[in-house]
Image (cartoon, rainbow, N blue to C red; front, top):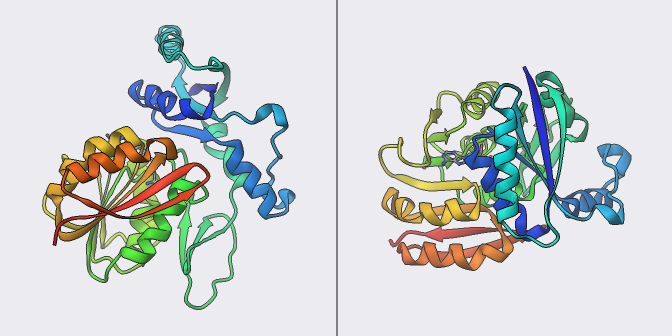
Length: 308
Ligand SMILES: C[S@@+](CC[C@H](N)C(=O)[O-])C[C@H]1O[C@@H](n2cnc3c(N)ncnc32)[C@H](O)[C@@H]1O
């Protein structure tokens, strides 16, 4: 099938709003290219090693990409997208570019950027097609994100991985809400969780997560459910992790509070820094106490605790 890649260049405060529009349109995955993150990689490693071109000064605004299937409805959907972008009243106004991609290109084009990454003390996220000599004590997550979000390089994912290292307890039940590639569910299992439920509303993400879970040999402890947030999961959890976007995290706070065991932990990520206070307020008013915040590349991750 052919797809239309729609790339929208926006000022930083528009990233989430545009990602929300794509999500509401059911684009099945949104890609956020943040020049600040790319610049950090370029500074941290040999750019050649990453295959990353350093953005020029004119390219400092983030780009949000969504994918629309070719077909009779495409023109109408593009028109609806343009109208939604105009209604945001951002300055400078979002700029929209489109290009056609074949499904295979879309699934593979990012592979050049993806190398083994060390995250936190013990975790290493390794692309399934790369060789990696494992060092004693390391926990290696073998990933092929396919078309789902979550290769470990994005700050929102890396923040969650570091916090999972700190908060996953042996034998705990973990719910990974918005699992994408399954990366956080797999990390939770490798870190000692006894039972993990990974949920995503996107069927492509669920298939990808399942394949990655099997690849990492943790299928016995990790179950994948296609569903909306916590609505399809039954029972309590010791830890819930959700890397989605600020508005969804804030709206999820009450359900999280009802689902956590006393003293349970919620790791919330995907929150653009400016919206941190709003999410903290939602968590606190749902009866959770925010006990830790970490920040990376303009994104904040929060740790909130249920009452003991
Ligand atoms: C930013 S990605 C995070 C992927 C992965 N957990 C990570 O940390 O890299 C957010 C994921 O949440 C999923 N998602 C968004 N809204 C959702 C909802 N209402 N219910 C379930 N999943 C949702 C998206 O499909 C996407 O896979």
